[in-house]
Image (tube, rainbow, N blue to C red; front, side, top):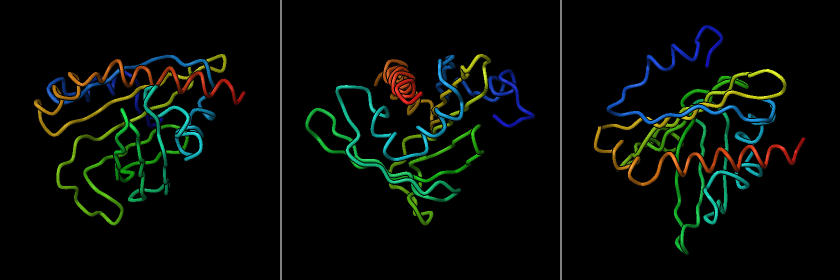
Length: 166
């Protein structure tokens, strides 16, 4: 969220046909959650809902820089290549799998993710996760796959992990 945007502005930007989103208050400082999201060693600790896991992560934190992850899901390894579209220090991360590093188009992109961080007082953070999809069908597929449960679990894992670093 930029300094000129409010939660209401972000809500107005959501397209219910193609976007999925939720906001939670996490009991960890914004700067720490930012560090967790932007450091490969930290990403591996929370970014996939348990019992699945992140096997590897590469981050080049700049617009056009890579955000590559490797996951293990039920014994299968899945590689996900992506890039950062927007990086606002301590406030917003936007990444997509529509492109790989070097702006190489993906053959079958799934979504663009937007993670917004805002101070919520007393060391807490307002954390908003949004997934934007290219079509209502892709959005529905993601919701049916368990967007709210899966991303909610990741959010809970992020908060728990960040609190171990306090």
